Amino acid sequence: MSGVEIAAIIAALAFVVLVVVIVFFLLQMNKTVNQTTGKVNKILDESNKTIQLLTSDATILLRQTEDLLATSNELLADVTKKVETIDPLFEAVADLGESVSELNASSKVMISKVGQAGKTAATATLVGKAAQTASNLFKKK
Image (cartoon, rainbow, N blue to C red; front, side):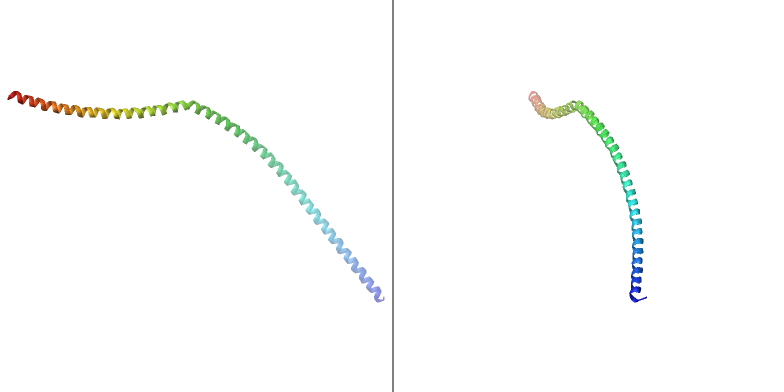
C-alpha cells in the first residue's frame, strides 16, 4: 500500500465517521423537534381549553352583571318613586318649622310688649298708691 492509498482509506474512514456523526445528530435533532412539537401541541390544546373556559366564565359573569344592573335599575326607580311620594311630607315639615320659628318670634315680641305694659302698670300702681297716700294725708289735715 502506497501512501496515497492509505490517505484515501483515512479520508474514506473520516468521511464515514462524519456521515455517522451527522446521521446521529440529525436523528437526535428529529427526536428533539418531535418532542418540542408534541409539547407545543399540548400547550396549544391547554391554551385553547383555558380560553374556552374563560370565555364561558366571562359570559356567565356578563349575564349575572346584566341581571344585577337590571335589579339595581328597578330598585333605583322604586326608591325614586317613594322619594317623590315623601317630598310633600318634607315640604310640610319645612313649612311647619318656619311657622314655629315665626310663632317664637311673635311670642318674644308679645312677651316684650307685655313686659313693658307690666312695667307701665307697676309704675302706674306705684304712682296711684303714692297719690292715695297723699290724698289720705290731705284728708287727715
